[in-house]
Amino acid sequence: MAVAVWLIVFAAVFAVGYPIALGMLISSALYFLLSDISLATLMDIMVIKFENQFVLLAVPLFIFTAKVMNAGKVTDRVFDFAKTLVGPLKGGLGHVNIVASIIFAGMTGSEIADVAGLGAVEIKAMKDGGYDGPFSCAVTCASATIGPIIPPSIPMVIYSMLSGTSIGYLFLGGFIPGLILGGVLMLLVYIISVKRNYPSEKRVSFREFLKSLTKSFLALMAPVLLLGGIYGGVFTPTEAAGVVSAYALILSLVVYRTVGLKALYKILIDTVVSTGFITFLIAGAFVFGYVIAREEIPVLITNGFISLGLMESKWTVLLSLNALFLILGCFIDVSAILLIIVPIVLPLVEAAGIDLVHFGVIAVFNLMIALDTPPYGETIFITSAISGTPFPDVVKEMLPFIAFEIGALMICTYIPDLVLWLPRLAGYLG
Image (cartoon, rainbow, N blue to C red; front, side, top):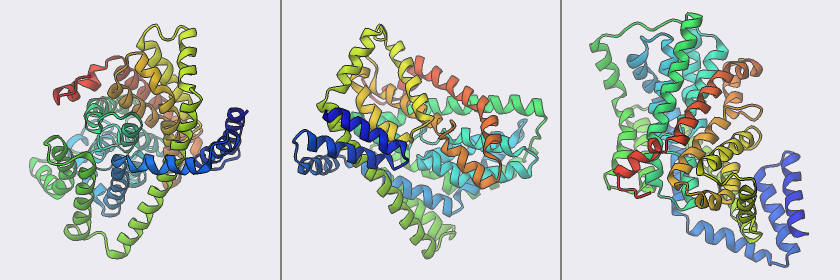
């Protein structure tokens, strides 16, 4: 009875369009009441869980860093530097778009931050350079997928909290998959650019390259500071988030002087709002996860996989979970999928002998593709809005990019050494 009410209420709240965090809390509260469990226990679960999750302190700091980088016009410098590197290739600005996202990925850890900040610069430059609006939006959406795969990564921080996996090893595991995705997308951009005869940028002289490097050098040092500090043993990933946020603030407020006190106040307010939303979602997931564990739902799912013959190898389990995440990503918010589904499937993943670092990187990779996938497709909505390009046109142009993204996901899924090579070099024993 209690379980049925829990599921029905959760589905109903989601169906009518209320925040999914609210659905988790309301349905779980009703489950507690029907199971004669004090609601004080619900509060205890949230407080105790949050008290033990120091890694979550990195989330608001990375959000703050992304907002400061965008407001401080650091994105413009990154884009200009990327233009000197790959602009002369066929479809030059498309490649610049992707390389700029790879560089920006090392600063913020958020696909939405990439699209909302760097995306506006990229789309305008591509449209002014003679590229179609839908193609410009599609490249921007696809390239932003790289953001949370290459460290730092807010989704990986959340996965680390859920699974107990080292955030440092997860960050290392995302490097090569992120670069593979970038290479695959550049291949597609080249193919389309040759077919449509898109232009190339003029080749710059070495002197111009050095000038661009000098102008963007301090911005480019942000990921070096962040990752060098973590893997050099100078500070933890959470401390690194604080260091890089302070660095971004000094750059924008003091060095470049592109952010004033009024803008900083707005950035702080926006950061608090974004953090509050994520915190509310995580709080709901803690309680929701308690119900999942109490009803032994992971055990039921594992038994279901066994009865269907899907546990014969870890590859069939990975294929099934990839399909599940891709389908759910079409309809549900990425953070919600991460917080609800990962605790359910983790016992299944461990039973199948799948490495938790490998699975974590693959899960984040998969869910980033979900942001590019209609009808939910948050990045498609953002690029459509900031460019004035009709949503259906962007969706149509996105289809080959989604196919190539899934291809890159499959490569990293079935060649786990691509994910685990760097973590093992750093001492990971998985």
